[in-house]
Length: 453
Image (cartoon, rainbow, N blue to C red):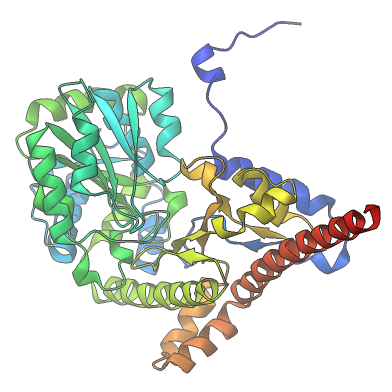
């Protein structure tokens, strides 16, 4: 039998945590013998918008399905112009369309940027689980920058770390709005970070894939506006347009980067030639200024906020649990470290075991643990994604009867997201069971000690 030798660089890369968890859940669910668990599991792990792809995008894809010719490497001129107009209208970010390059998803484009840019990468943590594998695969020098309790990096911490780095050029990955915390940086916070970046030659890859999900859209400020000469802004269809499977993203280059863009174009042409032609036509419709798209964004933002507020309130009522209050996205970070002694007493020694124990019968609850978010393995924090509901039905019900009062919103969650409601109750039950089991063992131990005296 032929033996195939795999490059060591590939051998060292692990399957991404989200795909690893998905495989585990599928296998575990199929093996569970309890008939009451036929519902599957409570899904707080996967970051995928539950809403349907906007109809104008679907219609444009169908209309252009026959178009099979290669597109220009950097994307259709019409699409790049639409993206420039979209950024100006929605985010007040005025860019020349020639600075816009299109690719098969922002994940790919971030990888391409790190390929071409020399320097040490600064990765704030907790972080989206996709950044670190790319950094390691490219063998980049990198340093973690752990955020403070408010969930955001500070200019002082950034400068303190930068002074220890020897590369002339540094690259900060800034994810705003943030996955996994759901937090949004203010204009003042971005200005203070920019001051440090200018002072120490730090380029910024600003991953703004969740920009359009900001609950109060007027509060979102693109880093490209604040630091236009040093920021690469990435965004796309995946989150705002619920079209992760379309695999279309874009990067806006900093000002005065013609030569760099030509070098980048070579990379794109070498790696994948061009982005899918029918998908680019569909994306033009998604980025066009239209009442239908405006309504879609407004409704989906409001529903994300209702689900996020509910999830935040329920988790925050659990004694010892602390969470970030989401201002965008469909995530929050929950800190379960107050239960660490109980976890350790039950041989749950790290966040991966915490995640695995929570998916076991009878809890069947999936979340993403701290080790997958580039935290210490002993940090019992987790990302909670509040998307386990039928988005199409929720949108219809919202349009028919928009909830206005707090009681209306509670009723909306109960009616439209019963698995979120039940899953949060299951997390409460799990924590109570862990406590009770530990307390019971301690009581038995104390009884045995008394008997031996």
